[in-house]
Image (tube, rainbow, N blue to C red; front, side, top):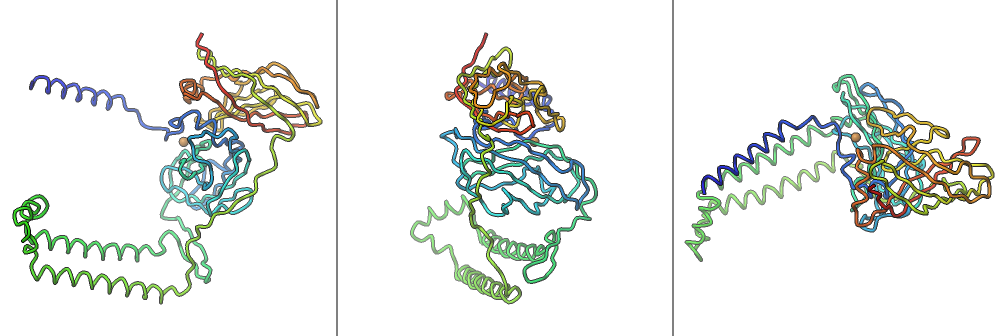
Length: 411
Ligand SMILES: [Cu+2]
């Protein structure tokens, strides 16, 4: 029996050793961990850009972009009834100075409409030196964060130089980095000491935890006798003292800061942008994912209601872009920006004004596997989503959301 235990322990130790030896430094932070259907069929981000990728402490960076709430929203994901736009960065490397959605301040939570497009702008101020992978992200109540494309950004300088001054509504200039900090520390220490003293008092009063429980069981109805008159006095002093301190501090704070307004927690609704499709309709007729070729193949029924011929230039989903370089080019912004520069090809050519045409589109790239999108075919509901970008001869763009069931092809 002992030998079996020993063997099991040895095996566990061996496994831990293997894992420890294998562990490589983490360079990502969960971009690929969310399910493929979630990344493809919830919030689709595009045109995301940062004003700079290298800046000093106290300098500002602006992140801009657009997002589209996918029309075929998964049933099991909460709808964006309450959502808040944020930036995902490991640690407080920046402070957010302002954020805007369609030009409206994004200080409050927002309700969004499924099937609509919005644009955003977030202004950040560098707080401490670091090299971070930053993402725009949308926190949706009960659904969690929906993450946009990431960008590597480097902040240099010295955190000691950081200032974050604002002028309050009463005309006072304060540094948010240190404002109220001493007071908060003081009160934490004060209550910490009181709590520790009260706890210590009871620890020194006699048996605690299990021995006390056993004694209570033993004494039965007489267990209350364990609490002496002194104990009761100490409890009473603590109770009255706490009330006195809380009441005094309330009135004192009121005297020191007579003008206050509550934290703003309202919710706003922001009107969506005009339809980015600009009169182009596109519908997936059938779609296959070719496992050996790492390629998504779909036929797209396109109707061009604009007055200029259009061509397909890009397909994007889950923050990955498949480009058709004959129509539209894009380069990866950095080493972790998944752009398949020549990943999209299609048969069918231009769609003339007023014409309805079937295009046969192929989106090929290893990203299907490396970004774990191909996992979609093992879902009980294998449906994909994404945006296709059409361009006319003047370079005007039509953005159309597409999606549908995906059938895997294994041979
Ligand atoms: Cu990242």
